[in-house]
Amino acid sequence: MGKMADATNLAHRVVGDGPPIVLMHGFPLSRHMWLPQIEYLQKKFRVVALDLLGHGDSKAPETPYSMDLFAEDIVDLIKTLNFSPAIFVGHSMGGYVLFRIYEKYPDVVKALVFMNTRAEPDSPEAKAKRFDTINRIKREGPTPFLTDFAKLLLSESTVKEHPELTEQLLSIMLKTPQHTLTNTLAAMAERPDSVPLLSRIVVPTLIITGAEDKIIPLEAAKTLNNGIRGSRLAVISQTGHMPNIERPDTFNEELTKFL
Image 1 (cartoon, rainbow, N blue to C red):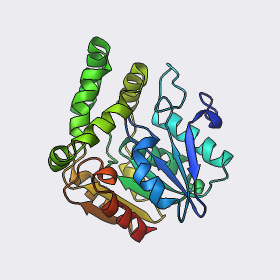
Image 2 (image 1 turned 30 degrees about the horizontal axis):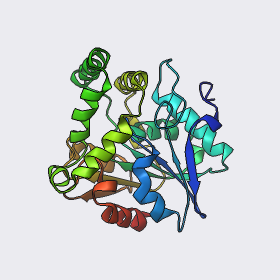
Image 3 (image 1 turned 45 degrees about the vertical axis):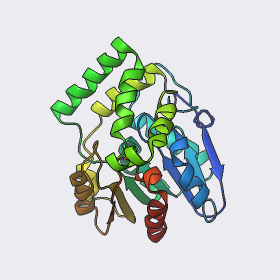
Image 4 (image 1 turned 90 degrees about the horizontal axis):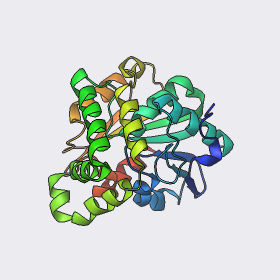
């Protein structure tokens, strides 16, 4: 398992004491997106916030990535840390990885939190757009794409009221190597359909999403909610793709209610 990066090569931070909870970021971010949750959760939980392969401070091999590879590395890490079974929180692409973890290693999962993610695979149009983006990054370098992408992550009201958050996210993303960006876009384009898995999920599940997400629409969250028996859906108003940093208090409250 995890031949490309052994467990200690996934950069991670462990804090707190109590039931284990694993925080998995989206593309192309890092564990630093979870700072408001780490501070909050460590009072009652043992928290691991990790950097997926190639992201943040984790190793960035130039060979191809896949959602399965990300999943294997995370499972290696949590077994090394004695974190199993754990509560997993997956944001966006972290949610795609979470589906792979649940499908392949259900015994390590105690509960699931999906944030601003979807179960459906890329449509042919979305897939083509990912490869257009790969070509753009190869042509122009990462900065123009990441500057545009940062503006999509937050709701219009957050962008106006908290311009510093756009800068904060951009500074995290600019640390991602170019080959990690292109390899990860290709991995997301080729990810499998997780809709058939939804009816097989039997652990407690929370779905959190921003009401104004420009990247993954609210319909995707409703599909998860309808497909996973007994799951709860929390929609946070005036937030986009990053409700955990746009309205951290509300996000943390929803998480606490579930936990």
